[in-house]
Length: 394
Image 1: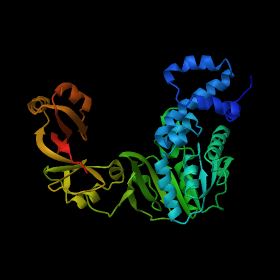
Image 2 (image 1 turned 180 degrees about the horizontal axis):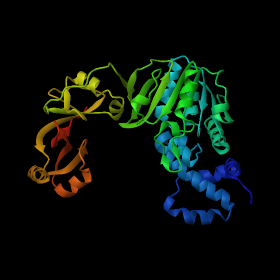
Image 3 (image 1 turned 60 degrees about the horizontal axis):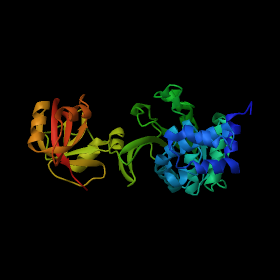
Image 4 (image 1 turned 120 degrees about the vertical axis):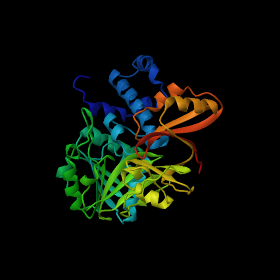
């Protein structure tokens, strides 16, 4: 099969033989790949077996983002799995566009098609564009595999040469990974953020997916910036155009709770009260800790640390609450003695503003016993401090 390209091999996976082979590998054990490959090569070409095993491995990785039902019907490239949007986040974005009256979207840099799928499932027609022929073919195969090809047109083209004018909105997900890993400079994205912003400003509405670590000063004045977490993990930031310029928002999935900025001043620093609140990562990234502190009638334990302290327990979707029983200056020997005295064997260690790693604490204190506790390593008014307590269950 000399001269066979990666695209040729992928297309072979879409044949009856390839699909049957891939289905047989759904539950394959990666540690047994050599034996499995040897067995399968007796009946199939080495190239097809290798492609099927690689695809089976990618599907297993994709389950965390797309769920088993979709992941085991879809196809992926290695880069595509890394950059794909989690399905819950894609559905949230698609719902926001639908609420804005959007019926058609130009999805530029569509990758494996995850965002196009979310948009189509919201009833939005999509032009999905990617300049890589293999990636475009993967996106096309995914639209067909999920029965969405009537709403998704896939085009292999340079996104900078595509006219988005006929569409209600533009969605851009620039590549943020290169040969050396993650790209942190927005102008080193492919295409650069400046091009994406220029394209967004020319459209009636737009959404740009960017890394959540983007500096706030890099957010255009015309954009609303939304930071999204899912299950407590910050997944991405989105720049929205045509919504609320200058607004900062934190959205927490799966609940959908959304906190918006009100321009509050930094909270005051106060002594540690009975409760400590750990704001969700999206709240912190969006610089909305002051809004949470105001909601809780609380203050900060340190002007540089995103822990809110308060004397009363108030329910909030934007922070996890801990009841604090002890406040000690940082001292490992004292911590070990206190935990031993209380028979703490189930120990959770959290940190913010401390150079000490949780595993180092566990190794040194050697927790033993039936009791549970949470140790929080942080700074209180500038001083290294250990706070001991327990999580408050909702």
